[in-house]
Length: 66
Image 1 (cartoon, one colour):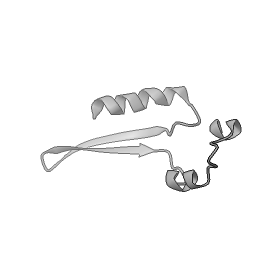
Image 2 (image 1 turned 60 degrees about the vertical axis):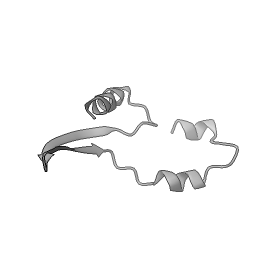
Image 3 (image 1 turned 30 degrees about the vertical axis):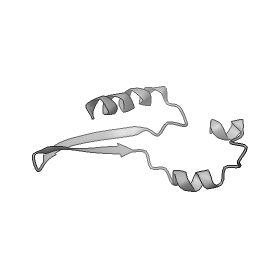
Image 4 (image 1 turned 90 degrees about the horizontal axis):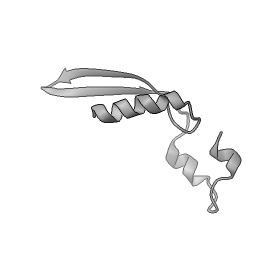
């Protein structure tokens, strides 16, 4: 888990529009196990909903980098 969180923090420095941003990480103990909470930027659309609107030919270049 720690490795994945570290990678999410590192890719946040690239500031790429297609990568969701990790804002904060909170760790605590819950029932003798580590409980991690990851806070990301809010995205107002579900990926599955978006993918239903994508044409079968794929996305145009202007949609890929918005």
